[in-house]
Length: 153
Image 1 (spheres, helix red, strand yellow):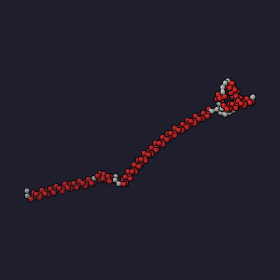
Image 2: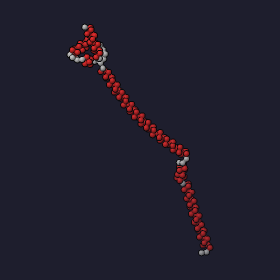
Image 3: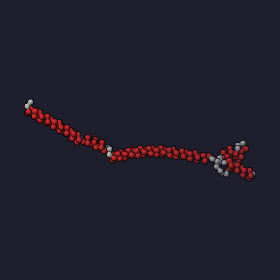
Image 4: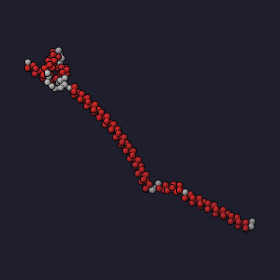
């Protein structure tokens, strides 16, 4: 091989090396300028900053507060249901109390016909308690009315 051929080989080899080197540099520049690569790099970097941690904590705190609010609303709904049931029970008991009060014997004066009926029932063998229930008055009222009738007679 003569010197010209060697020179041409060296020149071709160096041109090939420069071409490969330029392709590698160009690929590296394209990767660096790729928006997705840049964004990925920035996101990785941003996730480590104190501001990013603070934002993450704020999000977690917001989620936690939403959960707490949901639990509170659930318990309030349960309490509302219990209050409704309690109101119904109060109304039911109030009605029973009103009915039982109306069933209690009243303290009133007896008419002469009622006094005669009471005397007849007592003669028939009923007790004063039973007669007072039949007439719808208290036993003490019946005894007092009968006592007054005996004194008047």
